[in-house]
Image 1 (cartoon, rainbow, N blue to C red):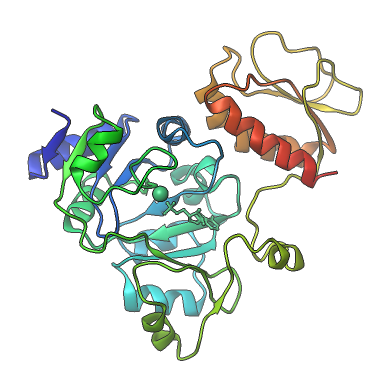
Image 2: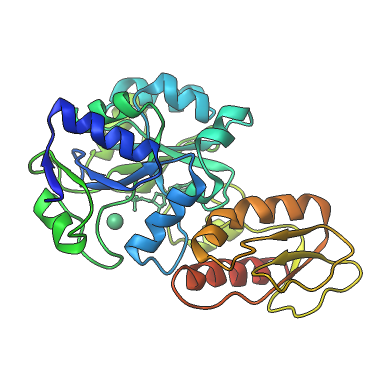
Length: 321
Ligand code: AMP
Ligand code: MG
């Protein structure tokens, strides 16, 4: 039986499973989350595999309180006043990643899809709170459904998509709708996604109206790059499906048959494991990008997580042309 009552004993058991790199489902007041230790690259990669997501989009990172959030991200005065007035609740704040060590050790780059920002939320559901207190690490958690399916608002919904996933039963989610997302990357917070916390309540805290920056507003994103960086794009030029490496190129390799390279070569997975490759994708790209102006990328099989890896590499290659 994979759906278990949220007893103190089971919450401890789930915390242990998370600490050893497993994925679990847990209730929040919005929807059930598919959660892993946000700092464990491979565990975060497993989320994308389990959900069958064809793309790496950034995940919401759940934390216990504002103090834990401030270890990971940089809060402007307005971001802090939103957090103080509304957490815990269905409010996600996107803030710059802290450049200090805790941010990089405690939240995998894959969890933010390589972006220099983090989406942070303090959930109010008592079971989520108890789990976060027991496990201590931040939890990266999208909704606990397969990609394209409805978000689960009770444990039985999770079991339909994931019959074997350990799931803490916290009853029916009281809000049943995703969190409201506010971008706090600049002085003025912006509404990025409407959700179950009414934007009017946030506007009351701020003392003025929020402007709405639709998530798919590519025109705005282009006008203000960096402001709404939706996708990580390296500075270096990427050459995909490379069989050989040119003299001025660094190499992002995959598998055991990497061609020889005179410059820096990082292998996504010498054994050809796609979960390991996904776990390493953004950290390797960031490292190569700091040393090289051109990066040759070996072909990645387009199956399982390989499709999401290729999607991201193609976007990065297009952005760097
Ligand atoms: P959910 O699917 O409810 O887990 O929400 C994930 C959404 O949060 C993503 O699709 C983004 O819209 C947003 N998000 C998460 N992390 C970031 C980030 N670092 N920067 C901007 N938006 C983010
Ligand atoms: Mg979802």
